[in-house]
Image (cartoon, rainbow, N blue to C red; front, side):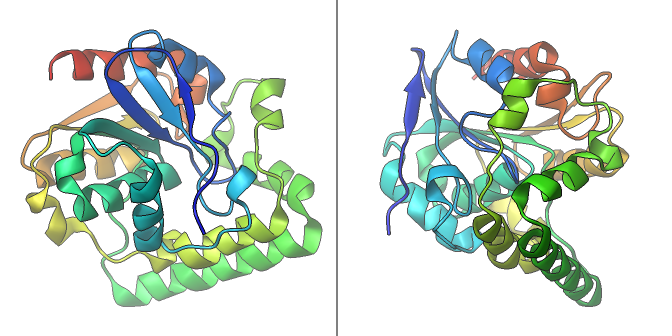
Length: 250
């Protein structure tokens, strides 16, 4: 089954942006609008989300599915959280197709096997919760988490969230952090310029951004002021400017 609905906007060097968990290609509208002013911006719904809610795929399988629909020529690949983890896997599978890498709120995975299994069980419990209460009630609970407490009240962003409970549950089961292998030993094989970003208030993922920037051959870490995990929603202009300044230097 092929992924549906690659959306193109703007003109300039191609930049692919992959959304986070519960989001869709229509999420982060302010951030995307700014990027489309300098780039041809490509977005699409990842497996378990939006138009592709019926597709269930692991992170490695998602990379293979993306390879079928994204440009063959080198492009800048970026993503947020779940989308950043997918981006890392794509870059590891298809390094010659990635001109540069932009990762916001990325995770290398979990090193300790016992902790990784515990996360897998936690993801399974969350998947069951989604199926039990439905997507709308789950989104209320999800967005009430501390990491999203400073998100602005934007009805367009809520409308853009994915609402297929089975798809979201499948995404956790097949591509949640608990399923992800530990990527730190592989980062040294990535030679493309890499920008690892995090909200300055997001301590956990700020540490991850620094570690990723140090682990790749040509990495830079940047931190978005006055932002937590979803920095591109909280501070779209600051986040987009960091991406644009990075790509301008390439």
